[in-house]
Amino acid sequence: MTQAIKNLSSSESVKPMMLNSLLAAIFLAAAVYVYFVGSAVSGAVQSEKTTRKIAEIGAQKIELEKRYMKLTEKIDSDYAYAAGFRYADETAYATRYGAFAQR
Image (cartoon, rainbow, N blue to C red):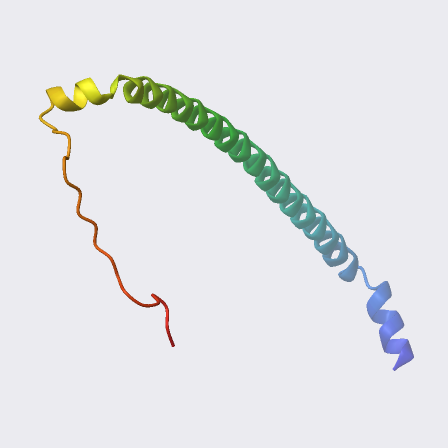
């Protein structure tokens, strides 16, 4: 049996097959490496785009808050009277007797 293994390993037909297998393994490893590096770069680019978009939306939010604050400064009692609101002479409140949360 040992002699058969020695004959098989020393045979000339096995050497090209081993070389082809080695080259295929190297090519496969290179392809996997390129794929993972490409994925990492793609993820970094997407992260950068997302960070820029977040910053842009944050700036828009700040501008909206500024507009809101300017508009709320315009609302006062004169504006309310001009819009048809009237001062309430009598106020009525709804009350609840007893504890609100009971078991």
